[in-house]
Image (cartoon, rainbow, N blue to C red):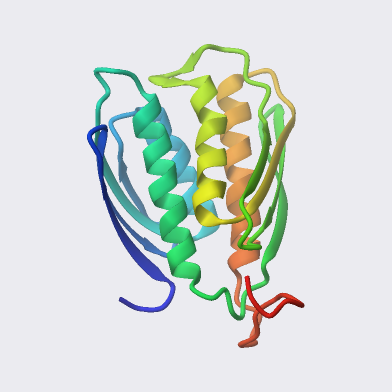
Length: 195
């Protein structure tokens, strides 16, 4: 496998996931999780981060959407972590604002090697399509944990929960795009010498 790429096969009694990722891609996405709104969010994330992603998941949707949402996020985070390797020659930090009509979101990421997530989306509906709103933020938290990054996401305003959720994911995408950008060096961006 080439540098900046990862392939993940994650099989449990709850989900069966196959994923391939190219870190510095063109934003191509082929996502089939069985949850239309999750597909929509992950497609927006990869498109605006300029990451190429193929992800298929067969999950226990007869139970509910939680296992599929969480496990897809964990697989994607693991792939990001693997594709980043030693995290040499990247910007490391990224931040962005993203509007979607009346909604405005802010995201800040640090590819520090230390997982942490603070996610405040302010969603009020129970569901967006077939995805429980409680799982929208959980996807971002699980992604941060598996990618070993610090991630802060705040939706600052917005009346429509679809817009709020999508603006949050687009802000994360733009911040991630900044953080993974090559900086022209071969250095690890840390005074510790390791991330």
